[in-house]
Length: 238
Length: 225
Image (cartoon, rainbow over all chains, first blue to last red; front, top):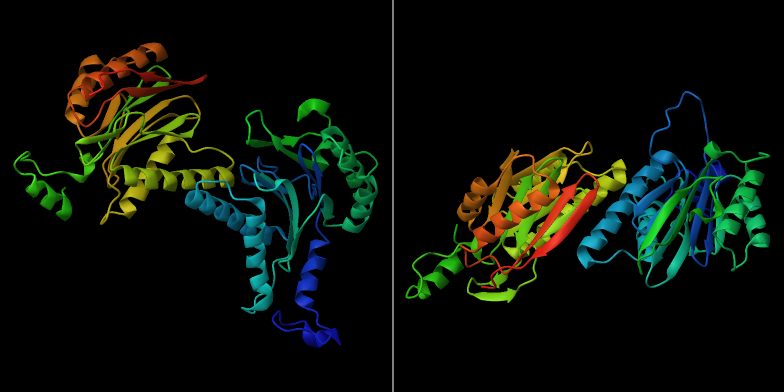
């Protein structure tokens, strides 16, 4: 029955669903898990690095956690090629806002613009939606530290802690039970590692399977930095 | 290079001045860049004037940091300077995000030149000076005209509304392979003597010296006229 309603993005099914959008979400669920945890002093993003082959050249550029602006980091889950287009768009959007207003773009504005762009692909044009979901971690004066989740449908929401990608339901459940507002970096890192160990089905996490970033204030007031964290570094590494 | 409106204004002031006003000397500026031993120095004056005879600010540096080892100095019309630096910052920040590294001075010079030539038939009225160290610590300086014709040298480059005086100072005082502190002294002397011959630039100066371990910036006190 579904067959008749899924070949075009621009039409509803009788039950009021957009099948192409749902299929896009399915595509995201095959990707490596990413999770985000917001703490009082910053936001942590962690993701699983899928190592497909020893022959692959591991370059300098991070695979899943990318910088969009000085104060915003993005975690990608889904079709990589689609993601790169959107990350580039996010970077240009942030730059254009900076050039126009002389201020860093507020996180929600950026998420909104990207989501509006994604929404276009579910309503007109006859093109398929992007098969990517994002987690945005950022800081701005308006909202402090923020964590956003953006979907292929163009829908987005703010979270204290959330997960996307493979086994995100399980990850989400674990986060729900173990997250609390008073987490510090060490505890958040710990929690993220445990959750990923569970979703990746590995007994002990190793360095090359994990990518982690922590966005926090630097010593200068109003300034944010983010560091790529390594698994076994000291507690006060942040 | 006068603009029609400026020409008519100049005509109406013919009693006091016989020279037509150039858009490039509307605000006033002087910038020098010099190379030393594994270091570069870039210096600018601090005057901001309006319509030539009015001084509006005396703390207006024409130097802009692109990254830790690269500075861009802009002369000419301040409005165009402001727009142009915004455009260059945009390009450099996108490059940094995409490539995960900073632009080398030579590459940045090429980008600036291309950006200026893009507006060949309605240009940005600004002439840039670029000074920096590449990733191996090798000094690089260049200057170009308002449509992007660049000429990189290995000693010094100048820009502004009184290049003759600036060049004269540099030709006299410059020595190759100076250490950072010596380079600072030389470039400061060149800037001060150069701007003292020009009523549209001066009111002090600011000098930044970039060396392999970092950089330092110092303000110069000069004749306040």
